[in-house]
Image (cartoon, rainbow, N blue to C red; front, side, top):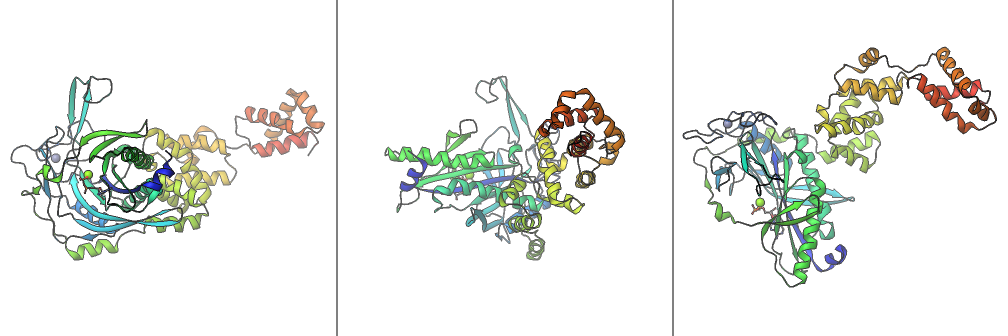
Length: 493
Ligand code: ADP
Ligand code: MG
Ligand code: ZN
């Protein structure tokens, strides 16, 4: 059954729950640090380990960040709300409950506008609430790293208590076959908005942004169907694939007269489909109740108004403005945004590079390196000023493309600014005609057959001699100059 055919008989409804780990210096309810990758169980204290008598204190920076996210998503901010206990057992959660929010979320009733193929779709936001992350469990001794077959499990509580913000959409009907693509575009837009606020690094591949994707199908004219919830979808591409594969899977069950059960499902990156997780517990299973150890959150409306007035330019507006300024296509702008490179390219241009030059380095060499190291572009080892200086050296003809790459390697390795690396490594384009002429004559003398061909008019053969000269000058000659000089010496220019 083709996907298009399925969509003539069923209407999908989607809903997304997104968790974002805030980049606060300390945890949600204690002063423990939140540095990523620290030795296990070194960023813990009596509060986040839930030792007897320890009491939580709210992190103001986390509340502020949540309010700013809510405002950027056009939400109303509650004037008074409380945290709630969500009770369940899991070994990575020392309190045996998660401090979360339930019926009194901090932000409610907003929306995000998402553009796909020139059409804007408004995605309603049900609520934005604050909660805390759990620790991490590591299952060892087995083949798969999963609990099945493991001989022991290790728990690291460093992550326990790091502030998490959950953003829940309203159910979104009416998207038809575009539902998978719009789901992906929504998550990308949400990521860009949160990144623009500077409150999280929102990296899906590192888990600081995670998505649960709800999907249901109904026949036209009927009520919405039962949803499944695909957990922890960890890339934009997977968001799209998870919705699509659920539409296909559910339609086959409904076609056979079967029923969809409300359950959580796991998305498999490798196969591109989902498998069942647990049958979904309901809210009453969690025995939610208002958290007695924390005071209510009652943000001063004047403070909220100040935060609202100070929100940054919307990413969609900014992208449109920069696309114009940089003279690039929508698609190119999209890949810049997806690489998280908008700000850094902007800064590089401000430091004197042309838009094309700035984009070339950050989206090419440096993006590749950031990928290899699995770090943000900001942590790749080159600054906007250095990249602008490098491009200037290229524009001035002091470096060719190949040499510039070598210089950039030196910069990234911490050898200093481009000019310093050039000096230290003795890299510069050889433009000294005397030296070049000698190298050209040498190449002609060493390859008389090729030289004869060129003299006879086979200009295409010149490449081989240019290559020979580039080799003797260790890539430091300007290929165009070498070519001109060569043809001149052979009398065919
Ligand atoms: P839970 O914690 O049980 O997952 P939430 O309220 O946090 O419940 O999230 C439910 C998500 O599922 C929301 O994004 C909501 O919009 C979405 N949703 C609700 N009903 C449907 C449906 N029939 N089809 C698809 N998504 C739905
Ligand atoms: Mg959920
Ligand atoms: Zn702590």
